Amino acid sequence: MASKVFTLEEVSKHSSKDDCWLIIGGKVYNVTKFLDDHPGGDDVLLSSTAKDATDDFEDVGHSTTARAMMDEYYVGEIDATTIPTKVKYVAPKQPHYNQDKTPEFIIKILQFLVPLAILGLAVAVRIYTKSESA
Image (cartoon, rainbow, N blue to C red; front, side, top):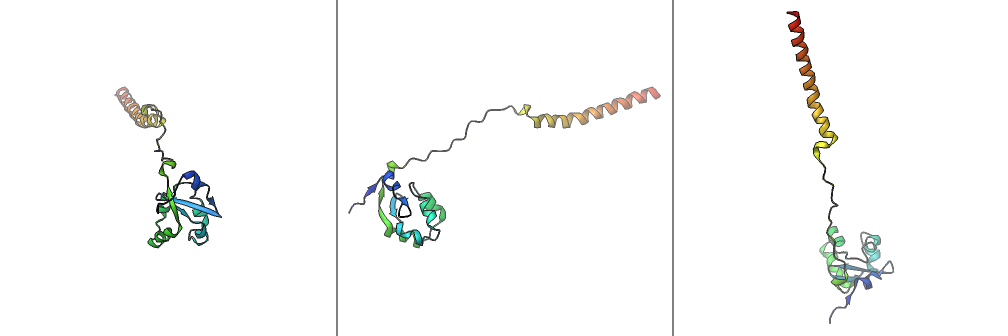
């Protein structure tokens, strides 16, 4: 017997505490009867409705017993073409800035030049006062 194939729109209609379906690994499960027994609580399952919950399921690290239990809730397959493809995140373009114009760069230059100027001034005063006293 062939499995029934559901669209995401059809599965999305089953997203309440009285009627809860999940999509995991390309398969559709009616977990309504399991909501009260789920160790993580029913909110966890309800928050994973109306979307592909495969990542949510895998991230938790379910036991082999939990995976075996899934068979009794199986109702069909999902039409993968109805699930939106994941959009790859692209960082927004940052304006290029000239590092030499940043305030940090100016401070670094001053930290080097000010002591150097003071040292030069001290040497000049020393030489000037030495030549006058001689």
